[in-house]
Image (cartoon, rainbow, N blue to C red; front, side):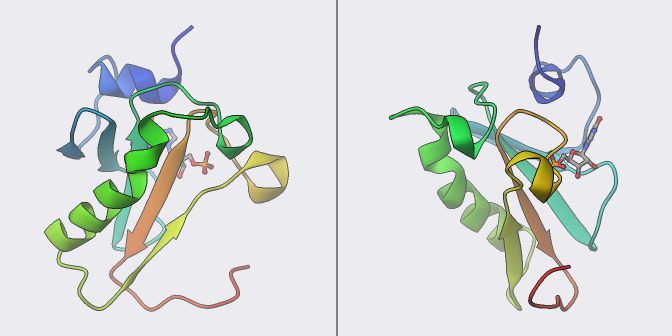
Length: 110
Ligand code: 5GP
């Protein structure tokens, strides 16, 4: 069965798409944690960092994040997050990077 994010990529579930290329699709998070909160998702269904294949769409996530951050005007900085597994709070088992920006952020994260 297709993941939630594949269904968004396929247009079965609506989302505000802000970027796409042959490897990744990016759209606004439904529950934003910052003024800018974008999910950058691999087209390939990779469950998470623990299941990375040798080669694949994940290799293009950082380049996509940089382009989207520029597109969003985040010259002051931004944060990229990948939640892996239960302890990190991963809820969707389809590899994605959170791009957060538009406000100052604390470190370490809570
Ligand atoms: P995770 O917790 O797996 O790192 O991140 C999953 C993210 O997907 C969460 O931030 C959550 O708000 C977002 N999300 C869950 N369902 C939907 C949806 O239907 N549409 C969109 N745009 N985001 C979603």
